[in-house]
Amino acid sequence: MSYMGIAGLQLELAAQNNVALICAEITRVKKRFPWVEMLVVGELASHGFDIGKAEPAGGDTEQRFSALARKLGVWLVPGSYYERDGEHIYNTAPVINPQGEVVSRYRKIYPFLPYEKGVCPGDRFVVFDVPQVGRFGVSICYDGWFPETTRSLMAMGAEVIIHPTLTNTNDREQEMVMARANAVMNQCYFVDINVGPPLGNGCSIVCDFDGNIVHQASGQAEVITFEVDLTALRRARERGLMGLGQPLKSLRDNPVVFPAYQAALAPSEALNQLGALKVPGPVNGDATTPQDD
Image (cartoon, rainbow, N blue to C red):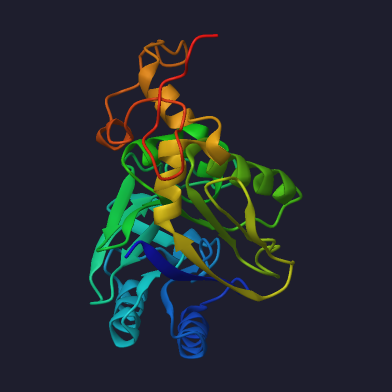
């Protein structure tokens, strides 16, 4: 099985404690759409922008979401919250499995500076495996402006990028363009779930591995349900975008040193598994090498 039902919840939230409301909406969506196995909420949905609401990892907010995931038997990425770790504060998104276990916590690598003041950058990329489905990666909002974040997750094997967002500014249109670009350049699903008004301005977007828009939301509350097909994604990575370019293989096979980093692409087990860079053969046959004219 390489399919999974996902729901993105674009909720209308204020700058307050929204945990009870979020839990109620997650419960309602799972009851209405029982085929959904993972639910995603926007960035900082639980408490808004106030770093004074920061909690330690495993605090009350996370415990409530863990209990809910266990009760409903779902994967849950409930957006992010401000996490206090000693003298430092991070913008952190937990990943919770259907047993209610926190399998990972992703700390936003690129806080929205200079506006997201007092928040430290994380330094670790996060991927996690959904058994019998595939590998997922996590990034948060402003991370999407840096192509290195999605590229790093792809190189670590991610096929679906879960991307909670909290945008209430007039650059939301640009972010939707970047979501689509991140998806097609890395041949991955890109699941960008924003918060609705008054905290955010909505317009969540889900893109597939061919760069197509699966759904683009309005500025109001919406539940975005869809299914990822990772069998089709893997075939596109192997045979190329619409049978044409195979950008991940070209990236892997070119030894160029990038001036921005003074380094070549690091080895990637995920990229090595894509096979040789060849012209695709017949649909039910093997790929072939191109012939000279």
